[in-house]
Image (cartoon, rainbow, N blue to C red; front, side, top):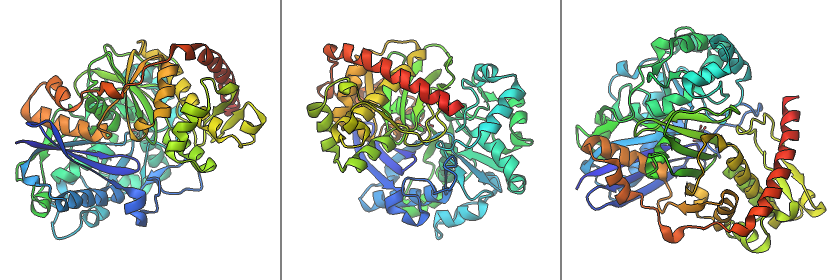
Length: 525
Ligand code: XUL
């Protein structure tokens, strides 16, 4: 009975999911929430406080400690790791980890000492910039100009110079911390860092997540020399060659064999980004099915038949771990914005859903919210600037029901508007993530997209994607076989669109876009 382990190191938690490929069962599914379980890192939402709101960084040791913690908990729960044949996983995209020594030269981890204590002296930079960071406007402009403009950059890497992407982040580090830069021997993404911990040596960045760096030539599947030079001198020596997402990057390190009982020789498959991993976990790696992932950030993505780039410049193209490419649009005001509304109005998630389904109607009586409680990625809004338009009670913050519908309608309209470049009508949309069980949200998505919305029964698609990727690489089986067993959409949970909502959303979309234009021109001014 072969077991496979999938891990997902995301913004707010580390999840682990164990599958049995014979029975098609998920055997264990556990998460360690950083804010709750590792409060000593002072990162209640997964990142450190900073007086400059554009700076969002995390302590990478928090991710290391969470790995020990989740494995410990699974072992205590009775998981027999000796039956695991392969491990893979994912990390929040774009975040980077800086080491003073290549992990190839760091020696073996000692099982007698917690892993975080052994990694601590290897960090050349104490904190990791993460995807929520928006402090790299100057670096984006410099990189784009050095390469001949944003269009050219997008044609090579699939994305324009993007604030949260790793290349601009690396350039900022090189410019602002030259001494630490000199001490840096190796740079990892969160994904390749987690894989490296597991194998006890340096694991390559995979083509799926590597595409989120503004450094990878997508067609060639290799780092682009001109971009490495435009980003920071000596960057090539600090990056291992990128690897295919299906590569085995090594065998599990002795630390995990001795401490948790993994079998020696257990294979570790390259880790990828959480969105590419969810594409697999949702069984959506063939073009034709779109996915909406509702998490700290909301994302809309789909496997692409051919590479295309977003003319508005917000969307990205990443590698599809099953081969080819995928599109992605990322919205930073996802669950953070929804939580802000429930907090302000003292609503439970049930109240929030009821407000949408029972107390308000499509179009929300003309009440519109621009839900930019934190700087927004899509479209680019550099300063938090929520705006309320509509009735006096709504604008004065006295109508919790309208506010609940307004945040979700704005998110859905923005997702629809900013994923039109993908060029395919979305008839069926799979939904995953923490909020994917909320019937209020699902109703609005179905009506705005006029599509069937299908939640996936397993809530952690990214960790599941890791387990499926490990199984596919080790057993060389067909993706579809795995999807049939582990990712069959549950048609009973499907939410069908209500055609009578269409006119209300035509009107609301026009109002939303008008207000959005005003905010964007202010943000640029
Ligand atoms: C995608 C992105 C986010 C993170 C969240 O480009 O920045 O979705 O991957 O973990």
